[in-house]
Image 1 (tube, protein in one colour):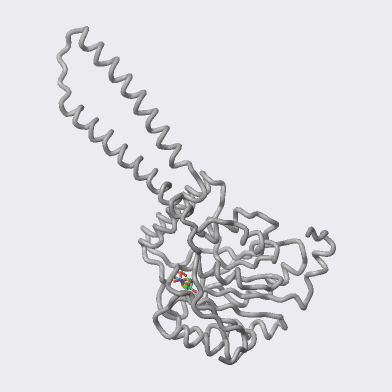
Image 2 (spheres, rainbow, N blue to C red; image 1 turned 30 degrees about the vertical axis):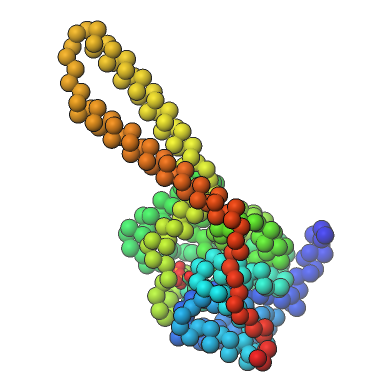
Length: 325
Ligand code: UDP
Ligand code: MG
């Protein structure tokens, strides 16, 4: 159904329901207080809301905390994934469960400032924007290597896929039709930020300072981040595969030039002393082939995972707000 522009704006009223999707992994020690802080902002601003708390297979007391909260509070629903599927899958579970007119995605550690929520909702209500996203004023504290890798990753994505993720965050408010469009995207390997950037729609950006984590530490190890980056790059661009072809062409041309030079030296009778060169060239060609095969392998693995078509996540428990079970 296509809703015309005027109807769409009128549909965005004070009664519109906001669903907050929050992926949670091992945050049991402070989840109750974090949700309390967010909820007090929502109540103060008279918003109509529901929380969808997704426990991404935590091993601490996260589930017992959020399941109890869901039983005590009609505004809170709790989902538990059957194991740790990763933040992106937890987000996906929450987005598929949410039925609000707008859906806000945020972290459980208060690094996304709840005080910004009323401003984001207001921007959505005014009707000109379908996505209101928080962008980081600065990237917060991170070490030099991490910083350089992140810069390189964003540069590659920007130059090859034309998606600017530079200061983007997962702190986003999406209109219902954007969520529905998001749900239509069939891929198994999810990268929320990239997928929502790919969708387009009218966007408003609001800057925020990344707060310190309330408790615990970041769940993203360096290795996990690299995995996410490789997934993102290979999901949005096939440029690395084209690079292999270009590399092959450059080496082919180089070989022809070297061949002509060798022939020339042979006919002019100059002695050839090329042992080191031969070894070096062999190493160069060998390593280029290995890198190229590796790169093709990454894409192949991706296709393999996609065609297996396994579910993105499995829900083992679900408590709807206020359900006393
Ligand atoms: N998270 C998750 N599953 C994971 C890792 C993290 O649901 O496997 C959640 C985590 O509980 C938090 C959000 O994703 O709500 C962001 O995680 P974190 O704070 O560790 O990431 P950072 O802020 O360092 O990017
Ligand atoms: Mg965090």
